[in-house]
Figure 1: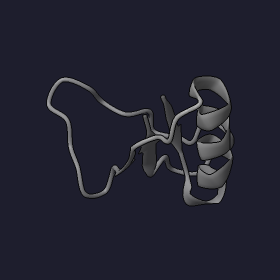
Figure 2 (figure 1 turned 90 degrees about the vertical axis):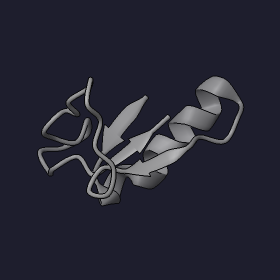
Figure 3 (figure 1 turned 45 degrees about the horizontal axis):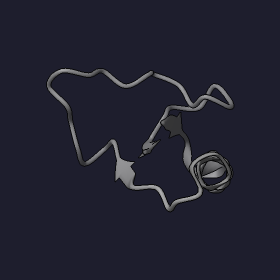
Length: 55
């Protein structure tokens, strides 16, 4: 599972496919909110806001 900005989305997809050998689901965190989970405030690769959840 990765939380990334738009600039690092393609990298996160590639990393997911390499690790799990399957296509990930991509969730836009600006459109979906979880009640039991708070996403990290920043991208895992930089200091930009995390926008996409790759699972």
